[in-house]
Structure formats: C-alpha cells, structure tokens
Length: 391
Ligand SMILES: *Cc1c(COP(=O)(O)O)cnc(C)c1O
Image 1 (cartoon, rainbow, N blue to C red):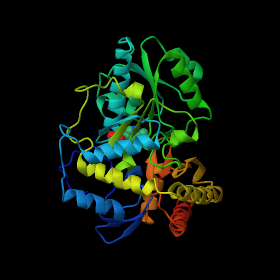
Image 2: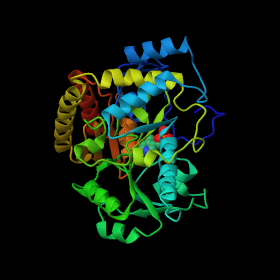
Image 3: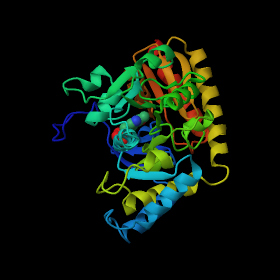
C-alpha cells in the first residue's frame, strides 16, 4: 500500500475501482469484478443505473443545492411517495444512516418530552446491533469494539440480547422512551429476528407507551423482498430509518415517522444543511421510479429464491468451508468454518466481491437486478474459493 493522507480508519483491500456497470466493477488494472457488495447494500439497482444517472445528471445541470430555508419540490415529492408507500406520515431527510438514526433518537426523546415524560429518555437496543458511528449511534450499537477509546459512552442506551423477552421486560423502566432494532441484524452476522419477536416488541411498546424504532438502513428499499423488511411481519413501527439504497449511490438518509411521533419535531427542533438537497432527492425519486414499478419486487423474489437455493447447494457440497446460509431476500449470509476475511480475499482473487459481517459470516449483497448467469458466475467463483481453501 502507498502512504496515504487519508485517516487510516479502514482496512482497505488494495484495489481501486474506476468504473461501475450494472453488477460489475472495473478496477484500475483493467480487471472486472462481479460486485456482491453493492457498495454495502447501496447500489441496489446496479452501478450507474441509466435512469438514476439521467435524473441526477439533469438535476446537476439545473440546481445542485438549495437550502432547507426554502421549499425543495423534489424533497416534497420524495417524502409524499415514501409516505404513500409506507406506514409513515412524515419524513426527515438526512445524509446517512447514522444521521437518520440520530433523528429517530431525538424524535423519541422529544415525543416523550411533549407527552409530559421528560424523564423518559433511554432507548433499549439489542446485542450485535449496528446503528452507525456517531457518538449516540455507537452508544446505541453498544459493542465494545466500536466504543473502545471513545468514552464516556453517551448516556441513555441499554442493551439486551435478541429474543430474550424476560431481559427486555426487566430493562424497561420509567425512564425508557423507545426500543430500537434492525429487522435483520446485518453487520452483526445476518441474523433475522426470531419469529414473532417484533410483534412482542410492538406489544410491549403499546403497553408501556414506548415508541418502536426500526433501523431499516440496510434492510429497507426492497433488499429483503419487501419495500421495507417489517412488511414481512405485519408489525408497524412508529419510526423507521432508511439510507443505503435510497439514493443508489448519492448520499441520502431518511427518518420516517407516524403523525404522533413526528409532530413534536416542530420548527427549529432539527435540521441539516445538505439533508434532502435537490441532487440527493433526484436520486431518491429516480430509485423509487424503478422500485415502485409493477413487477420489481416479483423479480427480486425470483432472484432471491434462485440465489438462496444455489448458495445452499454450495454449502452442502463444501461443508468444510461453509456451515449454512442465513438471511432474507437478497440480504444473505454464509456462515464460514474458515476465517471470513480469508474467504473475502480469496473470492476477490476469483473476481467476486463479498463483504464480511460479524459472527464469521460473509454477506452476499448483490444488486437486486442480478440475473441468472451472474448467479452462476458467483457460484463458480465460490466453488473455486472452496476448492482452494479446502486443500
Ligand atoms: C450502514 C448502517 C448504518 C449506518 O449508516 P451510515 O450511512 O454508514 O451512517 C446504520 N444502521 C444500519 C442497520 C446499517 O446497516
């Protein structure tokens, strides 16, 4: 690696990509890679999707930025469309997942405050969660490796194990404002919540006057085969956050809220210079044009079915390398018997990009527009990885 002036916070692979095209990335040395990371669940429509490129290009030549001091028509439209498609009545636009979660956390505290419960400020989160890298969201994440050296931890976050209702009930006090959870813990190792758990969370929230916050930053935007992952469960949250695939590569986050949860966020209570700027919402609206078109989700289901079946065959045939397949839709994880980082490196040598997750898992996060030959290409690369690693 060359000396770099960039702060050394990332364990980067020594590859630079110079061009993206659908499910492929082209490196500076001319090599082509099949991208099963999608920029970590961002480029869900594939790289440089023609409609997104056209809309962003048009907006760049018209008006790149406009302050939230003024009405931004594309932002109004994107908010209306998100509300029409989901449980929400309000949307706040941010620039990232962590910022969308910050908004959700502030909203929960504010809601309790105006309800006459300023003492209710604590949020219960879950072990193995990931909610971002700001001071509040690392506290929400609660993992020692992410908090290390950044103390004191922001107050107001309590962590309990997933699926442990007794521990959860015990953790709810008269200071609790909300529960916050990912429908599938993605960074934590691609763990879907146990069946019925989300319904239990909803019930407890209703019983205690708490808000249910869903972090759908990774699971949202059709990744699991529904527009938002909680639609699989029939449970509706009070607040849900989006980011990653919402702009297909333009940075944008969103905090969606019901009328009751959102209304306390009155004039001056929150803001962002760039949040929902014309470029970001042009990308978001272009993404919705494609994802909300009839048949899009059917295609995702069909593709997810095929990929899962092929991944299960791969695991069965190579049980010294892979243990099982987990996840939902096109958010899949392969539990490894060899170190997951070695699997990621080997796959890259064979032309396939994967991303590691907790619990010694590698994630398969292909663009949602993946086709069958590309599934076979990925499986071929993984068979080669297994041959190499089993030897
Ligand atoms: C990626 C991610 C975040 C953080 O998003 P950033 O845009 O990196 O701030 C938060 N929550 C979940 C579930 C994520 O996957």
